[in-house]
Image 1: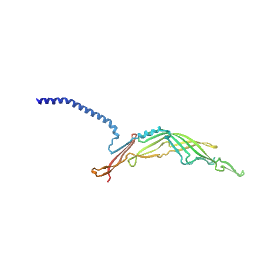
Image 2: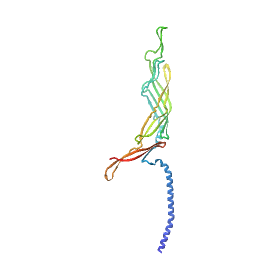
Image 3: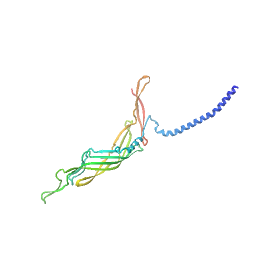
Length: 299
């Protein structure tokens, strides 16, 4: 009788558990499907940060730099102004010997050329090769203080008694009269720079160089009033440097060595990672550098 009761209990338990076990298998299958679905979504997103066939990988996004450059437009004008001042006379602006007896115009003092360039519409865009193009509108307002040394006009002088006389052009005696003239000028132009990146020689940093792309030079015509001579429209041209105006480097790796304690109070050992560069890629997404590494222990 007891055996029959026990058998009945076992059969009943099995019948009750069967639906529960089947439901559990369905739940597991559903979870596995959800996991595989999430894996399919995550793998493409994580592919760019997965390190394969290398020991170390560093990625630096250029977006923060681009965003920071664009905030220049929101700054006060004084914070967007470049100030230029001469440090030498750099020759004469104008000189005339045949007619005006070597009268000339030059800077009144070595520092007499001054100009302010207000930047606006500042932009930054990353090219496909990872270089950054920087653009801006520049509004130049300048002033030149000039020295005008007027020595007079040549005149014809007759020497001797004609018909055996000699006629020649001579200049008035003395050094002439000097005066100071202030000249203002304005000029607007679009400025473009290019910043390029490359792996540094040590393999641990990124070198950058920035230089002007356009314009190659800036041409300005200053209207100079020269007393009785009249007004001279004097063209002035300033060449922009073609060499990099800024260069430097920033680290991708902060440190590659450290210490650890040996077990049993045996002291400390210093280790160093010897890094061998394997890849350097600069593109629209940013800068990526990878290394192979070996560990060396110092004695």
